[in-house]
Length: 411
Image (cartoon, rainbow, N blue to C red; front, side, top):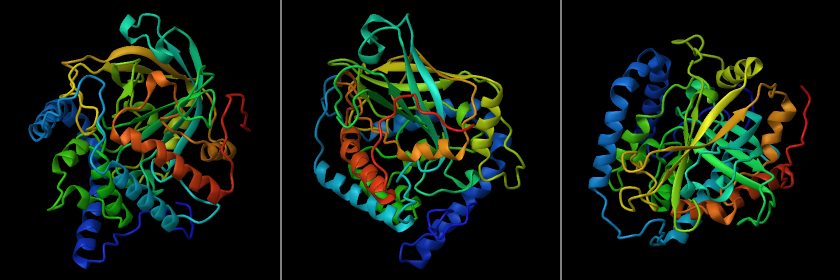
């Protein structure tokens, strides 16, 4: 692990101000770290036998506590105190960034650790159903892309010590038409994380999570007497695990987007790789960056492809826009193959290419109007991502940069 005076490298201890709470948080973290060492020995069998059933059960229990807001398909509704919660999130995450990082070495507030920044391309399929042929999916064509694979954050830890999920950020280039965020003219950004639901249902809950994250005691967001989120913890726990490679996981948008006027969708990316890389040295400590090393080994010998699937909203209550902790059921709307993400065989781990990830800004509002982000957490991301990205880049003294795909790096 890199030696650095900043507290963001490695996992800081809990700092709640209460010794008992600190002990409980640190003990729960130790338990998770120990479980990660043995997880691969039993998790594949558990997932195969139980995960689908338990995911459906958790979703049903979450829905039992929800009321029907009476919204229509693809309809949004501003939430109470939404802007106040967003102001609080931005302030707390910004303060945490200042607490963890020093000027010149500011990292992202979330999805912090870069496993790899790789070249790719997205090819739109020819056989997509007519009602899904909207926006970038309207015609069969190919877009170049920069794909960032990353860990959760807000810290940079050895891979075995993170919370067990990964993220993918895709920046398509050469996308024509006006954009909702005008600091980039030709890009369309896409996002996915390895759990199929978001860690918080809305901005109100997200503001609570950020306060506990600032104290390095996120467990008390979920296990909280006044605002419990136990079922969200259950849902996340069914999907977070000891990961084998960023190229071997599915990724889910978790939040909805327009698919043309009056139609909402979520999307997901599913790896075509069927093999799984063995995590080295378990149950002892693997190399700190074993996930990047797994990517390096795979892309040194072969291309990698992901199927991009779209799921159209058909039930406004069971497939909600404003609650992102609810899994959209495939029995109501199947996931339909719409495109293929191809990551060609390549060498990508030069210091210059890894550093390139730090100057890019990903934002879901880098998009055409046909794919406008929907829901309160998506609305929050517009200002949240922009302000925190501006903070990071200003502290690192780098300017915003829109890539073209023609960038080159030493190999």
